[in-house]
Image (tube, rainbow, N blue to C red; front, side, top):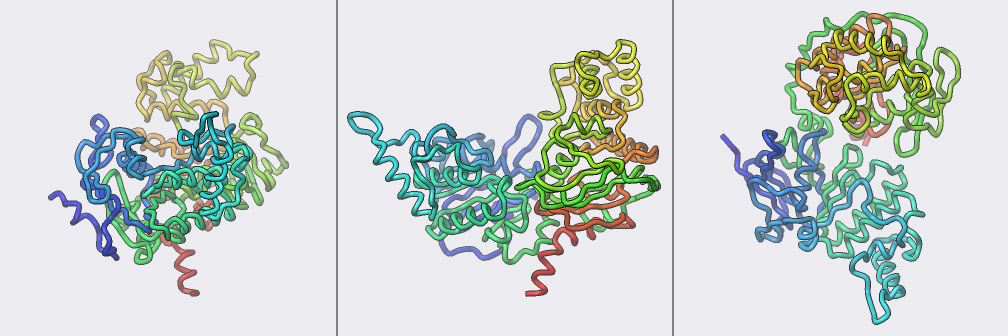
Length: 522
């Protein structure tokens, strides 16, 4: 039986005051996909409210439903107790609902004050009154405790300051609700502390703040209340102080642990011994990854587990040279190397399949054959084209071995299913004959049949001696395939051990364990 919004909202400390925004039984569909299914949420003045959930849980869709980006198919939105419909983001902003996205949507070549008052500049007979504009912006910045020159060019400031300016702009338009979507993803610890100082100031002034973040420690530091979503549905509303991190992780993942703990690990190949393929010591990048040590061996699958935002992808990109490390050493086959670019990594027999298949892997308007041969051609250089006979043989062999459908090398990549696109991308890297294959979410968004084929391929590659780094948000998948387990949280490696009958429950305990230990010591 379908729950009403009152029944869905889990018990907790409910303020005597009325919510500034209430969304009741919101549903949104895109074609046959139900993105939100009767989701309800309440935002109270003077609270920081975290939206929690894994990738695809519905957080972004819920925000866009509230801010007029998406029209809702069913349900109601109340602001100050009155039903509202927002046909555009401008309408939502006029009602006092402002959003600051992870990518700052300001104009870098304008001044701080010009950005803050863009479209609302004080004007006189001779045009914009610059002195009055700067004075107004300075007063708003000082109100938030920000020492930023309003006459300075926005683009000259680091991203952390630009985000604070975006928040100041939102506050200056009398925001009753401020939505911060992944505001800390590119900030270091000091910058996060400053952001939280501003958030607390606004909360104390009575602003309702929505905070979206995958960093659990930050959520527990700043948020008062949380709404947990999973697969487009409401799991519940909880007070942060009354919910342990382990309980939150279980709510977000939402699987029956007892069932997952009976996973059959028989498909995992026996680990082989050998020399390190790659060894990194103290590898780090400001705002992405804290200093990390990791050694990867021949014939071994190293599974990397952790919630979204834990640093999994950042680690993968640094290992491949897609991002440049600030510090740390890299040795490949015991020889010190500096991976300045993916091209250097490919030349040293490393391969990386990105989690963002559409943006960083698939060339939709090229054929399957062209997509499959891109990495090999790049390694040869564009002045040395692959001979036609070699092209034909490689494409034919990999289409057969990976069961790519349709088996047509001239089909456009964009017309293939997600699972077959993923197999083409795997073929692209396998053609380069790598010694280390880094796979970031290789089975995300594909059907169970293709997922099983890819898992079997990973096991087979390791059995043949290849070193594999396997990253997945699905813990049971990581445990099924890996010989060794690395656990990430909040941009750092917090645990590493052999995968000897490790359970999903064990991993969840590790992820939430540091906070538990801190509580016990307190």
